Image (cartoon, rainbow, N blue to C red; front, side, top):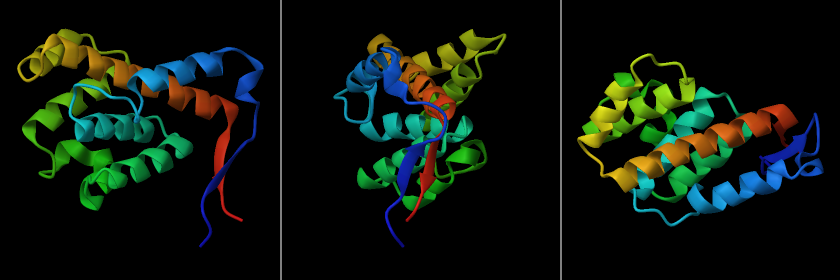
Length: 153
């Protein structure tokens, strides 16, 4: 099996400055950024947003990144049903619940999820979690819009 490659089917994202701005955000909070938050948790959040938003490019990229930093195959593969799994810690589940609500963007009681997060994380860590999720939501939507499609030769 050859390596997965990607092609844009809709537009070149570099025709506007937006792609450059998204790259700056990725440098700040993306999977290569140096953050205070636990690296594995940060990667689980990225993978969850990718999966939840059905971004083929992002799911492939962040599944590989998860495995590369030592997250088990079981945890990586089970991210779509984290809430029905004992593979994740209580703290991971709290962060994933927050991630889901922020990604959905329509919770009438978002404060409840923030309060649950605040029991386990300090203000900077919460800000990093929010930034990770927001950044991933930008990237998943950009890749969806540009039609970033996986293929093999």
